[in-house]
Every structure is written in C-alpha cells, then in structure tokens.
Image (cartoon, rainbow, N blue to C red):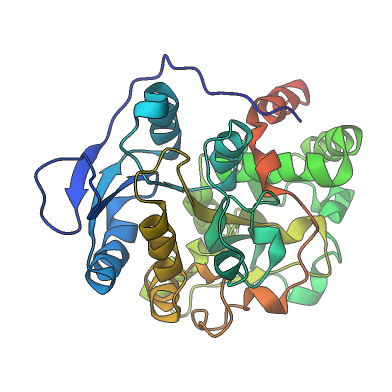
Length: 337
C-alpha cells in the first residue's frame, strides 16, 4: 500500500492555545510547539500538566489531524513545530514515509507495552489506544451468541442485524487494516458478503450505539469508548462491548500517537514531553476522562476495560493506515458507499 502526500489545496485551520502564556506560536530554546490533531478539550489538561512538570512552555496549534499534517508539509524546513499529535496512526505513517519524524530513543519507545503500537521505524509512539469492538444488545444476545472471529459476520444469520458506519474514519481505518492483514482480495470478498447481509448504515458510532440499544439492530461495528459515554449517563444501558483477541482481525487497536518533527529546534525537550504523556498519571487521566486504553504497563484502564497487554493484537504496521484512498475505492466498488 503506497504512502502519499496529502494535497495542499485543503484549507488550513487551527488556533494557538498556550499551556503557559507566551506571545505567539513560534518556539525557542525554552519552549515547544505542538501541532495537535486531537481536540483541545481532550488533551489540553494533560499538556498543561506536562508543561508544568517539565518547566517548559508548550504552544499548541489545534486543527484536525489532516489539517496539521498539511501545514507541516507546506512549511517544510521552516516549520516552527517540534511535535505532531495525531488522532490516528495513518497520518503519522504519511509523515514517517516522508522523513518528517526523528527516530525516538529506545528508552521511550520501550515504555509502550505492545510493539504493534510503535512505528516500525521507531519515529512515533502511540499515546493512547482505541480498540475496535462489536457492541451487542444484551437483552437480545449473550456474548456466547457472537461468532468466534470478526470475519464470520458474513454468515447469513446476521442479515439485517448489523449496524456500521462506512463513511466514518475509524471504520475506514479498520477496513484498511483488514486489507493489510487479509489482503485486498479477501477483504473485498468479506465486504461483498457483509453488503449482501444488508447492514444498516449510520453516519458515525454514536447512532450505532443508540440503534443497538433500541433493538433496531442487534450488533454494531464501533470503537470501544463510545459505550462508556452512554454508561456514564445510564448504568443500565442495554449494550455491551465484545473485544476480539488472539490476533483476530477484529482485534485492531488504532492509536492517538505523536512524534518529534525532523526540523524540531528542541528535540530533546520534545522527547521529554512525549515521555511525560506516557507517565502513569497522564495515562490514567486519558483513561478516566476519554475512556481510552493506556499504552503503558502500570496505568489502569477505566472500569472493566481490558488492558492492552491482556489482549493479543494482530501483527500489523499501523503506518499502513495511511492508504485510505484505496480503502474508499474498495468501499465504493462493493456498494458500501
């Protein structure tokens, strides 16, 4: 699957938010500039804590992950950015393939408990994990009713009972992973069989959870953390997550991850900031507020969520998630889009 630069025609956006008050987005030897594709409400408190702990000014420019990558590509050698923080691994893969990230120290990358969540080139790390799961209606099904493998939802008995979101980025990432794990031909055949099972399409994950709870569909393909947002409001919400294991193609964990920009003016401090984001208390902050999976040993996941090192993940290079174009083409070809 070929890596590709994003086109520069997309409008760039993003605003400066300062972890410690400074005059502008530009960096110096006593500060860091972070381009974040993660939302301010999700990550700013953690960045503030790291700024205080390291006694460094961290200047944050926010946009979506694609916008921040486009900005880095446009700025090239002149970028003020020291760090790039992406919502998913695919954009980090593009930057890695372009030589846009510095290699990280082994003492940093080894903190991540599963090697599948670190770039094979050791130039980015996962900060938190987002598992793909099956949600099911607990009043209609028990966990034992679910197939042993994610790929077995092609069975005709699931016809009309599946909710999915083929336009959603996290779903498309999973299909891209299937292409890497199973090959394009097998993935196309799987998608064709799922389409024949007449799944109900939704715009994104949240409506899938609502549809499963109401009985409109029995199961849905989602990211794990959406369920916990519902359970926080209603502990009796009649939906549960099922995590696939043992290297199953359904056991994909994508990451929100980060790396140090090749042209960083302060690479040592940038690596220290990444190390701070991997500290147990910051990891548990992400777990308790965003319901994401910690990626380091010793940090506790939220509630009954499994730890990453308790799951056997499929061997997969998350850099390959950069090939979104091929996945969209395939989804169109099989009639999913």
